[in-house]
Image (cartoon, rainbow, N blue to C red; front, top):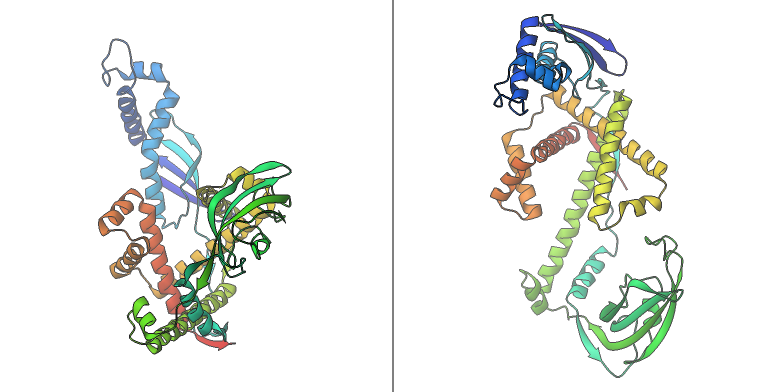
Length: 431
C-alpha cells in the first residue's frame, strides 16, 4: 500500500492512498458475497448467485461502495499509524478511482489535533481570591438547623402573620380565563418562604380563618409562559388553616436528637467544622482555577473552525436535552430567547472547553501524567456514592455506554493535571 501526505491549512492533512489491485479486487469479491447473502435473485439461493448476476441486480457502483466500506478502515489505520498522525476526526473520502484490475486510488482528508504551544506553567506566582466566611454564617447555619426542625401548631384565635404557614384554597385567572395549573385545594403555603408570584404571599397576611377574598398580582415580565408574562392575575383565596411556626429549644436534648452529639457545644463545634471545611475547599478551588487560568492565558492554540462548530453543536444538543428533561418545550424556550445570542454563548463555551482539554492533554504529555487503575476506581466509587447505585448496575451502564468510561478517564486526568499545576506553582490568597 502506498501512502503520501500533504499538509493543508487549518490542521488538515490530505492522504493519497493506493491499494494494490489484488487487495482491491479481493475486497470487491468479499462485497459481492456479502451482498448476495441478503438480496433475492430468481433461481438462486441467497449467497449462491454468480458475480455477474449480483452486479446486474444491485449495480457495480453499489458493490464498490460496499468494498470501500470494507477496505478503508484498514487503509486509514495504516496511514495514521505509519505517519504517527494525531487525528481528532474520522477521515473522509474526497474522491476515489476504483477500476477492477487496477490499483485503487483514494484521496481522503483528516483533521489533526491542533498544536499547543505552552507558555510557562511551573514556578509561577499567582494571586487568587480568598474565600471569606460571612460574619453571620455561623448564626445563619444554626438558625437554619432550628428552622428545619420547626413544628407548626394550629392557630384559631388570630389572623395570619408573615411567619405562618397558611393552608389555602386558591383559583387564579387572567383576563377572565382560568390559569392552567393555577388552582389547588388545601395547599400549604409558607408565607415567609414562598416561591409563588411576587406579592402573592404578602397579600395573605392579616387574614382570618375561613375568610374568603380576592387578591390581584402581576406575573413577572420574564415569566417562562409567554401567555402569562407581565399579565395581571386575580386569585380567589380561602384561608382553611393557620399554622404557627415554633422553633425547638437549643438544648442538649435537641442536639442528641438530630445527630451524634452529646451537648449543644458539640453541635456548634460541628457547624464550625463545616464552615472551616467549606472555606478550605473554596480556597483550594479558587487557587486551582487561578493557576489554570494563568497557564491557559500563556498557552497558544490555533483551533480550526470545524472543530469549534462540532463542539458548539454538541453543546447545543446537550442544552436541548437538558431543557426537555426539565419538562419544557424546547421550541417555546427558544422563542423566548435570541437564538443568535444563545449560539454565540455556546460557541464561546466550546472554544473554552476545547482549549482547556488540549492544554491539559499537552501538560499530561510533557510531564508523563497518566491515568492509573486506582484513579479510575476512585472515580467509579464517586459515581456510586453520588447516584447511589450498586457496582453491578454501574458496570452494566459502562458496558452499554462506553463514552461514560471515557468521560471518567478524562475527568481523572484533568484532576491530576490540575493538582500538578497547583503543587508546582505558588498561590497568594487575597481577600
